[in-house]
Image (cartoon, rainbow, N blue to C red; front, top):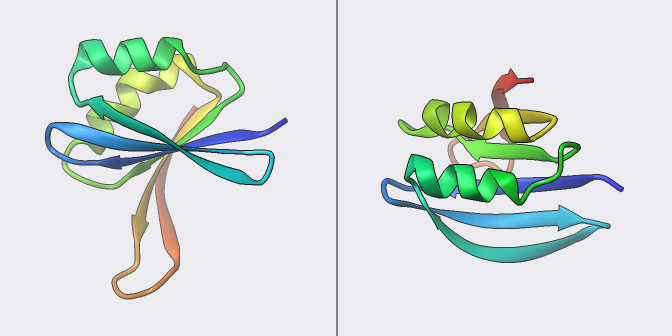
Length: 91
């Protein structure tokens, strides 16, 4: 069972969605604080993959979540397209 978590990163919060068994599920918001991200990370599975939108906070978010999951991917959407560019992957 593959599970991918997507986070749309904003300055003070992130919108979280889970993709599991071919279905998307909105999981609400998380605060963009280290404490909140670590708490969120502890709820994830070691086999999960997290995709974080490339923003100013994305490296900090990926470094906090990386110890809890299989990998963290930082992705950037191409302007005006439905395509994503994968910028960086952390183990």
